[in-house]
Image (cartoon, rainbow, N blue to C red; front, side, top):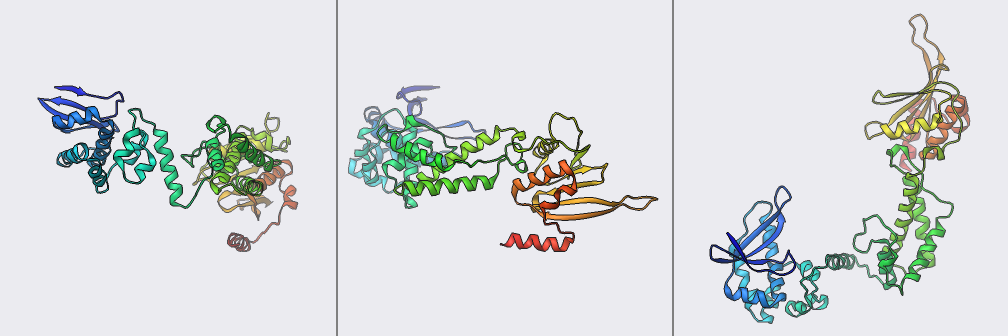
Length: 411
């Protein structure tokens, strides 16, 4: 049976309990194999309890020094009680100078102290007791996250000015550069917001006439990587010209914002927006490399090209990158090879009769991105293989085509 002897308002700060007449410090830390929080306890004395009651700073220092031991216990190991008990006197009862010296020798969780209001400058100088004079029971996790982000930037030699930091706060990327950026004007100091908005306006102007298109080769939510790269380059170039004082981190976050918003627009744009309203000449069948098949017929509410690209979006994968459109009545078709950035057009030269195999003419062409595929697919569904004549060059010899493909891959 456990009796709570002392606890603070914050539920995570370790409490002192009495178990079978023995005072113990109890804290939650880490997680077990089922991701449930683990609870650890170890004995403390009455003199330790007195300091814990009266001195929030020492209480938090003890917690920060115990946490590495809890982490070492892992998901099911036991807490090293001897090591935990050995922390009590040096952290709780020693003179401030001795505590400072002790913290230079043992591992401790700096982020926890920062979250609880420790003075950063004093903490960095190693005067941990003095740093804890500003400590609070309430925890501010964002403060610790920002400190870690600043340390990472310092380690790679990045120094942010006030406007740089404001731009990163505006996009929500000050702490985590990998998060999807947003527009958060309320996160910016009002005095710096006009400068941030001038930077954003420069980026928006650089995007005039640019867009990021859907790319069915990447599935239903796929977008064109080359469009992203083109837009990012345009934004970064414009922002660096107009605001040469900005750090690279600030320039990149604005570029990321513009591209992310363009991707969101692309994903909500119907496939019809990328295709001409033309329909096919006759019944067409779509197949993939896994045996799936879909038929399009004239009079369908959607064009053949749109239906084909939707088929691709639904079926494409790393092991399914070959798709075919066939006009069986006319004996011709095209086969797209996404893995090779190429397309083959196939025309029946002689139909099979009397048990003889049909004869086909196969010609290959390299394709330049999703826009190139769209042009070829649209032309075929409008006019068959003949409509592709001006969209080549077409190479009939497969070995020669492979050489051309290798040359392009090596440039």
